[in-house]
Image (cartoon, rainbow over all chains, first blue to last red; front, side, top):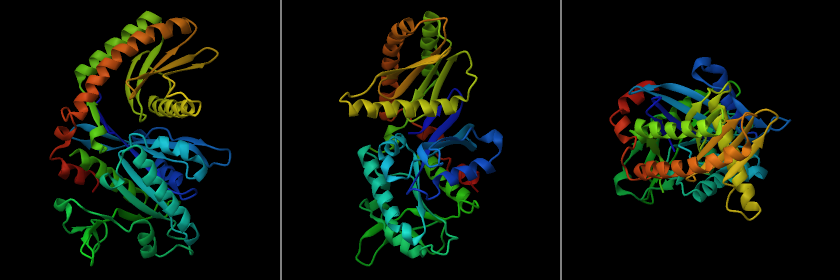
Length: 225
Length: 162
């Protein structure tokens, strides 16, 4: 639920980083915090346990520029990834404008990724939000690890695509971030499917962190255009 | 319900009416500062003494506080807690729900009493509820939507993100 404040000339949008525990959601925010100019960001708030596991959420406000004289301010949130904290995880989704699913590329975490993705769909559905109709993308994190699953395998498991029923949207749409790939396409069985766009990342070094943030912010602003 | 239909925006006139209502409240109950926070954690307005803390962080934590307490209420069989009170040694805060979408927070110290703050807030919550219901009905009715604001700005958005 974006908020436009005409008095302070601000557009405020909420982006949530979702995904399995220890997948790198907090690391994404920490990297953004460390890299953007101090005058364009606020405090990084972390409600974490003593062992630095997210208990409720992390929060970071960042200004990404001005459009039509309005400051675009993005509120970045992470959720606690651990299964145990679903009640608090769900609360963070309230009023969300865009979602980044941070997947852990390690083969051993495939099941945890799938469980978290299912949990995201379920929690969004409980609020009446349709994940397929809002800014949503996937970040495959930890691509540098030797036990990282091949990209194709992760895509098949987490981003197989959803059916496009609206005839107006049934047209070949190339993925602007991956040459030769499509976001909307017709599969051999004749159905039209759409996939979320994705990014590969190594959040600890910052690789792909800003690409992901820029892409989701752009998607969110385009829903207002 | 699409996420777009949940978007809302308010004009300078709305902002003026909100500010007037909050200033009246502060005057009547001798509190220091009033903040309005939307349930998703966005700061809507601040009136009174300028807070010496980070208001954005404050707004986020307020929304989280209220949401967590809503869930606690459900666990004990209540639909919600429409107000919360946090008492400190010198500074205290009283939070109240407005139209199920916004939270009114009043910060006060020993110059006033909880009883007076609570009493006066009840009137203000009534006024603000009417005002916000109007704002929300406008938002979901398609008027005052941000479409006009960023319509045709695709190129500018592309440029912003390179």
